[in-house]
Length: 303
Image (tube, rainbow, N blue to C red; front, side, top):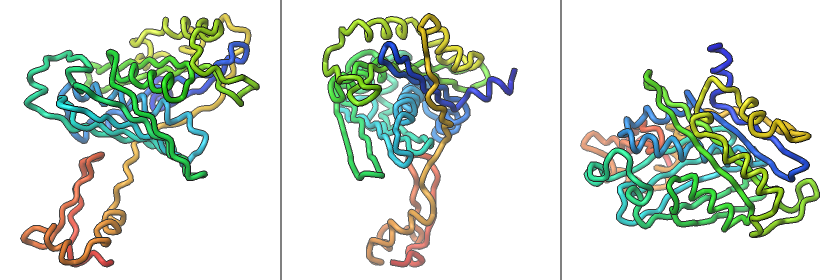
């Protein structure tokens, strides 16, 4: 049983419902999530917020057809507890971090609203397609009760694709965190011969699929004992055909290396590098994503 559970963590499963002209994806994060969160020792409220954002990033990012493409989710806030949150996904690798005001966090309680955390905040979702060099970005207000609500609004407003997003996060008594997500969409133009629906969200096919998807509980999504295939079957077992499209494995991936940092520092003149260094001539560069500190001698960095 343990092997079966572990096999369904850090995994995404895509599927399609041809007769309803819909597609979907379910995913569940486990050890990857714990590794990212453990690097920072966040307070529970911030930890849960980042877990939800990471799940959404991997859920949406794993739909990219370009294997070298990248999805980035970033918040922009005004006078909120959270000053910055960034998550990105590329080629199955996931990372993210949060900057926040600890004093303000102490004043908002154990279950703050999205507005209490972000104030007048905005969510930016950026797609970078390496194979074509194209870049797309949409920015939407951080409205609703969760980050998932704001991301759902992005698809409605920026992509004009009817979309349902659900995310569940659960932390067990052993301190481990499990998160699951569900993405459902009505197919846009060019997929299975479907005409683009634009902002028509009341299409009967979509209403049917969205109604079924809304019955999925967040506890089910974060239940590591339930295989992803079972989640799909529970929702759509009465449909005439459900096709499994693809499977993806998710891992923690931070792209910081001593070589990369040296290449960045090498762009600065030696005089500037010496100003960055401490009394021992060492520049300590820390990665916000993985909290790793890289000490490098200012004079050893060659242009």
